[in-house]
Length: 302
Image (cartoon, rainbow, N blue to C red; front, side, top):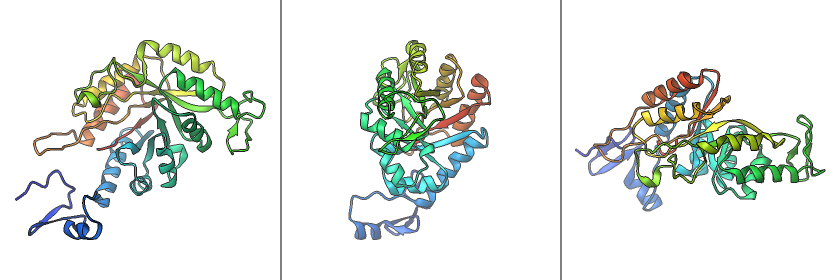
């Protein structure tokens, strides 16, 4: 009997065929051709609920944002949004999330190569957070926010005047600062994003200067810190190390611990359960940062 443990729980063998989510794969191949991606919607929804429960049962002020880069499809996003997940987007993925019906306030935008158009789109949509990945992001958010003011100046907080393109002026832009915590993840080198040589985020030693720079910009509202140490991570103690690294910096009200939880690709692989992952992450956050914070996580392949 073939090992079905890597497939959704609904997978069964029927003769020489495979049924997933009630559908025979031979029927799907005949209808749609091959190769084809087949997603078990029931399993996807169950996984989304499991993620939400694992986090919010331990920390009610928790938010789960699907990393859209893992599967940039409006139909996929629509399912996850309907289950209460937000979205983690890069560049044009913002359009997909909005088309899928995601609440802009639940969207986080990443990217170490954001274009002016990307930032402008985030400002227009009034998304939840723009993640600042470097000093250049600060400069361009400042410039784009200023350029959209009718007078070319920052207006006082609370005074909102729509511009011709619908972008409110006078609102401060909520941002998170992505920190490169100097953690070398036990994963493939191409998937590690939090080490000392990472091109993503601001190195720890430069964080105070980045914070000071943002606080000098009236249009920017720095809410918290972000760290994403890599993908396909099987050792949950690495996530705990990332929490401790952020806790060594100035304290904020929002912490985004990224995603990266590993999944099984081969039968002998052992991946952490969501309960183990969420339990250790939240315990570390409560220990190092306290309980009165907002926690975001950004699962993708998992």
